[in-house]
Amino acid sequence: MTEARFDELIHPSTRLTLMATLAAADWAEFAYLKDRLQLSDSALSKQLAALEAAGYLNTERRLSGSRRKLYARLTSLGRESFDGHIAALQAILADAAAAAPQAAEPSAD
Image (tube, rainbow, N blue to C red; front, side, top):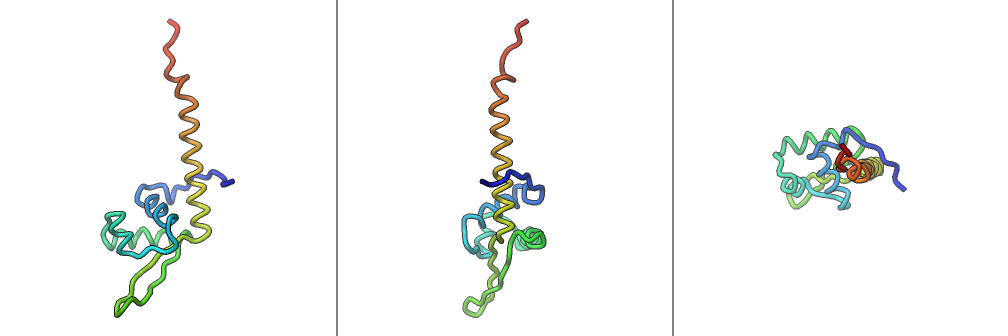
């Protein structure tokens, strides 16, 4: 079972979407990620660099025809951190759902 751990680094929506996309794939090409996240080259590069510096993903340049293409994938640490963050979000939702009926009850005035 995955330990629930909220992760401030991957919580912003762009990074969370990037991590979720990479969690569903072995490798993902830069152009695909750019289209999926609707980011500019520089914005995606910045997000990839931050996550790579944390050890959450690896990037690799591969020759495709006469062009080099950048690919990214999650590391085991990245997958563990992502799974822990999702577990933490699910715990927050479960706690809120459990408290909701009590919060919604009218007072007995």
